[in-house]
Length: 609
Ligand code: ATP
Ligand code: MG
Image 1: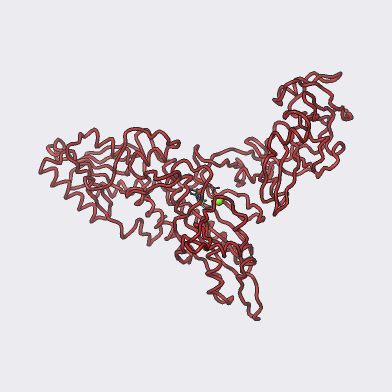
Image 2: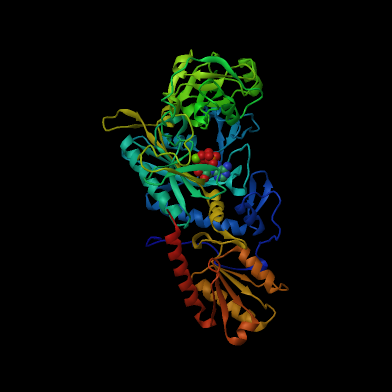
């Protein structure tokens, strides 16, 4: 599982430490502005400290976990032939202008000028820099493929930094980039990295899923995100309960649903047919409708309408989207269909002015904008829709007949839990929340074309290189591990990224015998390859030491005290199972080794699916 030559931790790391000298300031209180569990626990355990919004100090305990995770990432990538380098965090604007991203990347890109007035930015990602490195150093097909990565601090001026390390402005990322002569080679590397990511997250023992994700304007189906499953996750994931199809809801293909009222008689559009005074909620509207054959309508009879504004390059235009009233719009799908750079709802006041009525009554029929329909409305008729007249709705709406600029039906809604899986046609979607900890992406020639990153083939002909890129949120992953591994008392670290593995509690540091034994065990454990934090602090009650140990959550706790010593025992406790053993000091090493075995076996079983 860990591979034959796995180092398991950082060889350069200090293996033992006295807590009286360690920078670990624990807090009893839950910090007021901490919203998610990892943030609360990391602050309370003295691991991180906020410096400014989305900017944290990684204190020694946190940095140990970070370095351990980095070591796992390095080990798995180097196993696959990737080479590590380090690029500057400060990037000149010229490269971003070459790739054209200088004008497209929004305010997340922190731009500044040096003393001579030259434009720079702090790197949010490094496609431009790596492409420049490769075009300057690689000329021939003989030097390809190549896969280069770095582990580095990134800066993104996120609009809403939150959740501690999960969405910071400054954070540590592993970003890797590969260069190839053709698509087949790039695809092979993509799947190789996909497998490497499975090994990397598998080694943490967390439950995670690779999910198909939106590849944005670049197009193609070649991107997967890796998500750690957690209720606090910002992303919604749908997973088929019968086949392998798992995807980010932004991308999930929604099944086309048949129109459930196909046996009715098709009516003409009855303009502003029914009064819906002040009624905006869809359910109320449907209920309010009455005519000779209907007394109230099911929601599936009602359509709803969204007015959007799209931009692409310098161009801006408005358009409409119609959906069945019980469906949600998927703006990512719509933006991709339009090939737009950005898409937003038309501001309410403008929409009301355009339609000449109050919001809630705005509808597609009279508006002079192109209209797109979700494909679950294909074949639907006798629909209701806003009549662009305050307090009125139409009935008898048939999109293909009643709209002057109708663009057709497409998959434009959000798939939902319980929907039939369109891939296998058998299973149904289950919903999960996920934390995006990594992403693999086939870039194609987006950067190599704009930046002239070419190679010469056997005949000396020039071609653009095919690129892939591969990211892992290092600091976000460490936080995500905690989101899945905690209890009421604190963190429950999985062995591979625990800051220390054994917390040695010396309950009577004033007692010479206890101190001698504790020091001896500390040293012996270190020599046996374990990492030990020795709580040798004086003037602290056992209760406080136990509480701190639970909060810090190292996998094993070894308690040495005067009382136990009289019986000739020390106490070994598993943080996760809370199983406690009294053991003779002479057998501590073998007991700790056995406990590690047990813990690692359980971790292998817990990881992955
Ligand atoms: P998100 O959708 O969460 O904003 P992203 O898709 O923009 O992330 P990528 O460009 O794919 O992020 O970056 C690679 C990895 O870096 C992500 O998978 C994520 O784990 C991590 N990451 C991105 N933004 C942040 C952030 N603000 N704080 C911490 N980690 C981040
Ligand atoms: Mg991403």
